[in-house]
Length: 201
Length: 144
Image (cartoon, rainbow over all chains, first blue to last red; front, side, top):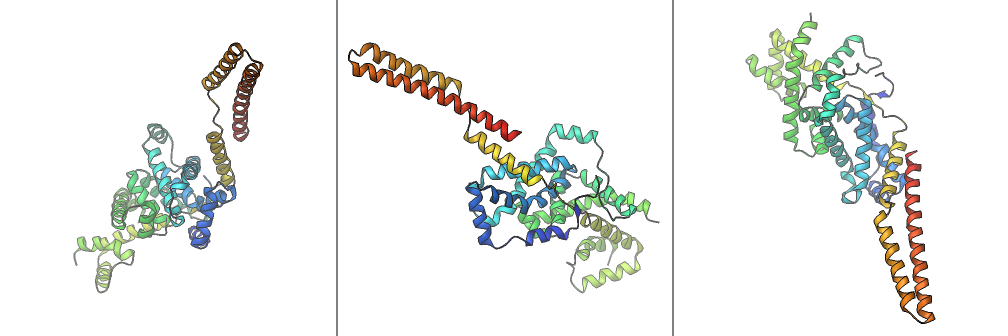
């Protein structure tokens, strides 16, 4: 894994801000429901980065993340008519992607592959080697967390540490999400403390 | 403030959720306690590592790939090939009706009607076969 295709976290916020008003969103959804390819493509372009990153952080595999992103949109496009409000699209897509990730993590085939494969090397262009190593250690520890904790923590950080937003995207209460994130963090801390203590002089 | 209590408040402090004067008391404790300082540093390091993971850009061709796959699904749904049993029954049913009408009907009108129905049945069967072949071809086209 190299740094190509990586960008800073503010990019995701920008990608969200670029979505225009609710009316435009509703109009786009209406066109998408009629099967207008340009509207479908617009939906993909607006939401793919968030979904791709969510899937990547859950599965730590680029191809798997691409597959999950694609399957999410295909699944969503098939039942666009069941979506009532255009404003709910983002959260709806996130939930589909999250469920697909959880299903993959549960599948025996995926588990066998994971057991055989090593985690990808850290991805960051400008990171110093120490930082890169730390990121790697955190990713490795993250991969060992229970899937629901990992999902909560990943979504929370992907949304700029916003518990509220992450809870909205995953369709759980803010309190539930906060509890999961805290537990996830506590487990990560417990796993990483001995390693980090060794590294600190 | 005990170390145990301070450790429980470190994460809220880090997230800016701790109000005064509690925050100041925790900070004061950190100045004097090396163990809690290390714990705070550990949490900060962890938080930074999680927050600084770069956002990856999906491959540029992904939207096009998804739209093609969606179009393929739509084609597969709409042009599901007609089952062979339906073609055969249609053909047999129409042919039998036409044959019976031709045989039974003595008049030229009945015979003409029978031939017309027979011709219609054959045309329908050919149309079903062609549409099934077209559906297969479209699916293959989108897959390629």
